[in-house]
Image 1 (spheres, rainbow, N blue to C red):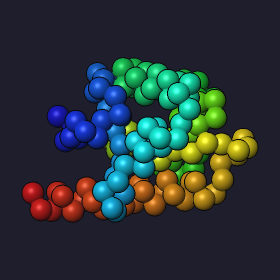
Image 2: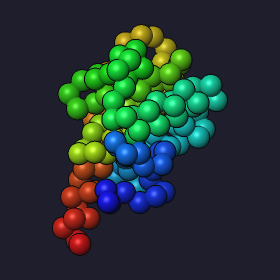
Image 3: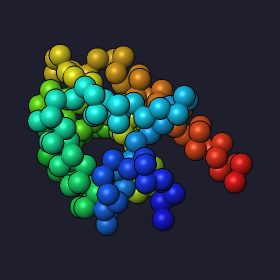
Image 4: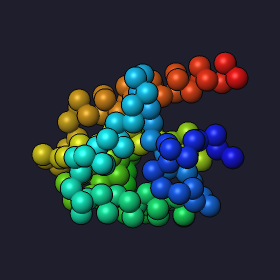
Amino acid sequence: MDGIPDEDLAVPRGPARTIAFARDDAGRRPALEFLRFEAPARDRAQLDHLFHLLAETGWIANRERFRKERGEIWAFKASSARVAAFQRGRVWFLTHGFLKKRDKWPPGEIEQAERIRAEHLTREAGRREEG
């Protein structure tokens, strides 16, 4: 189907999109770690709803909850939590998350999202060459 292993799925595959965790160079899934250990329960519930909505319908119209931040990086937004993502075909990959301290994204968080995106795409290309 989309080549994403089940353990990398953020929510079950939807008819419109797949939401998955990106892996960095070390093979870690920073967004999963954030959601499990750092994000408040209320924010996790809001983010999970957004992930399901995107998987089911293919889009989130509310720009307060989902919008492009810079370049290829998009943001899912809950009360105090932010999760960065990028799209590749029908799949949205979650890079990492953080708790916001102000309205504007800190440059370091966008740079981290871009780094994880690049690392994930490099790993993905390497797997294709091996197979």
